[in-house]
Amino acid sequence: MSKELVYVIRGVGDLRATMATVWQMVCKGIRAGAVEVVIRRPGKTRLQEEKYHAMIGDIRRQCFRANTPEGVKAVLVNQFALEMEEAGTPLAHPGEKVWDWKSQEAVYVRPTTTKFRKAEAAQFVEFLYSTGVELGVQWSEPALAVYEEYQEAKAA
Image 1 (cartoon, rainbow, N blue to C red):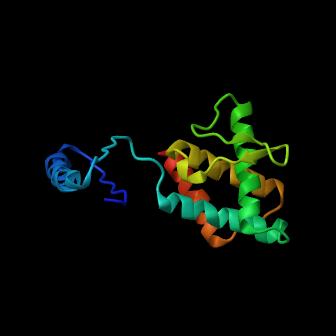
Image 2: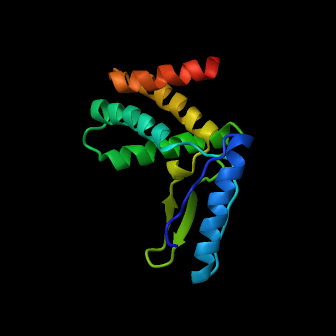
């Protein structure tokens, strides 16, 4: 087994069937070598990530066209991480500075959004919205929908 498989158990009703499936897969996989089983709470979804990419896209198109989408995202994620750290709530998986012994300079490895927890992703949406407002961004329909959905979820 070289790929990662994820099963989400939403309630006790799902437990028996899902665990039976996992048991069968582990029994089959163990024949080829060790198998690792990880239990964790679900993190943010790919859908959440796609949603805040719409907001990042609006910021880039309207304010930083000369930069690549990846570059603008890197700056925004870095600014968000710094803001979270200053607020006393650093990201669960923060970035790091690594010393490059060849060029004799520090290299910054930014936090990755794929490791954001659900709450961090929600806070990132809020950060993107406030940053965009400060920059005078006129939000597109997809980006507005993301923010409105976030506000509704927060109010519930």
